[in-house]
Length: 238
Ligand SMILES: NC(=O)c1ccc[n+]([C@@H]2O[C@H](COP(=O)([O-])OP(=O)(O)OC[C@H]3O[C@@H](n4cnc5c(N)ncnc54)[C@H](OP(=O)(O)O)[C@@H]3O)[C@@H](O)[C@H]2O)c1
Image (cartoon, rainbow, N blue to C red; front, side, top):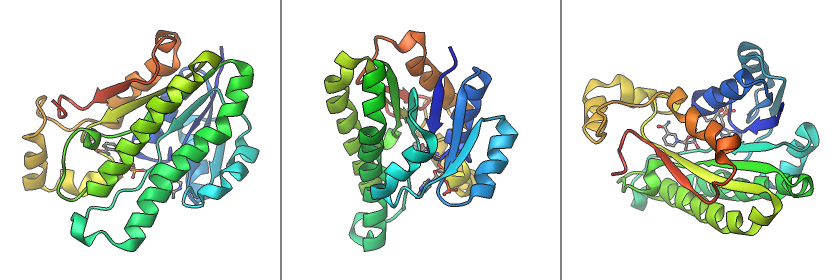
């Protein structure tokens, strides 16, 4: 059955790979990014998705306007986030606001906005893209990690409450994945080796490594899985 799917932040990196995978499954996919509709349209065409939308999730109070554009969806993949690498003593006010607004407030607002139609349809799949930093400490990612832990708490709490209505809510926690966000680390040999030394499988992941867990959670195989966290990290969290 063709599903309607929204992947937030799907113009690059992990979100783009997930959106492309749903397209290959034959689903009706909406590509999303913050502001640049030409970028969203370009990626929509490249992967063969059905729709492209922009909505700045910093403006989390306006997520209703995003819903007006997409309508209800069967699968909501909450992927977009921001990350500022700063020691905890030096996290700027701007970085505090943006990480909390986009990573936590917009997550909750997206779920609040898209859930009622899922409840009415007695079917919905919500997948949160978390992070290995839920499980590991990082000297420059204290707040980012806290936002991902907060998201996991939302996932578990809400999963329990919406389960009777056919809606599942799960999290995947990727490890170090090569995307535009961390290409500079990957392209610096010393930094790359330092990160690789933390990964039992000995390599960075690629965005496509994150696809299988999301398709599992949204497909028939995920029907009885809710409130779960699937690590996709080459063992980095162990
Ligand atoms: N890469 C990793 O190693 C890694 C590891 C663990 C977890 N993750 C998580 O996986 C997810 C994807 O990571 P990634 O590395 O693929 O990210 P990325 O390359 O930084 O891409 C982020 C996406 O989110 C969108 N976005 C950013 N700010 C936005 C805003 N204010 N409003 C709407 N959309 C916005 C971006 O669109 P614009 O171009 O419009 O900004 C882009 O499409 C994130 O939640 C991240 O925390 C990543």
